[in-house]
Length: 190
Image (cartoon, rainbow, N blue to C red; front, side, top):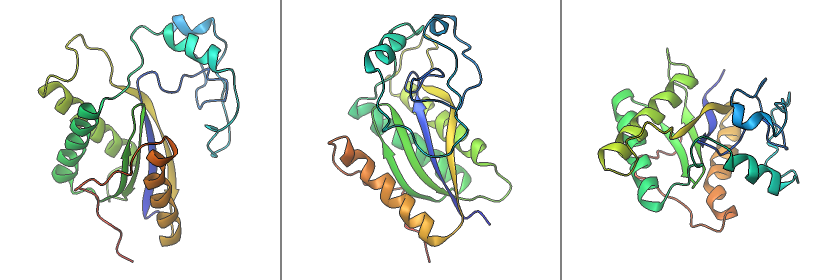
């Protein structure tokens, strides 16, 4: 039985459907990106973020997007966390770990009866976007904050939850940033 989820979702422009390392996309729906190749559909569930690739080509593709790729500032990351906390309090989510990085987010979130993980992530994204807008930290031109899809791992044992929490907590350190401690994070009860 699923006890929790490790979810990763990107800001707009973080991971493109034709990323040279692969993606979970079946097609490239943005005409500006088609010239950089077909979708690079992967079938595996393992992260490919570490795979070497042509960074120049990937950056060139990002420059072709309709809007610039999102890079959260510190103030924006704080606003995103406040939006997450609002969603958590509205729906009673249990968040066991959270890292908000400039281009993507990692969360370990407890399973919630009668609510699919995709819906929980959508709720978190919506409240974060609302908070960014209400603080004047996001343009009013309807540009997207988030990429559409969510990468998710189903966690079915306390040890897998602990491993995912450790991974999420270490993620900022891998990017030479300090560990993050958010007040809405609750350690799992085992």
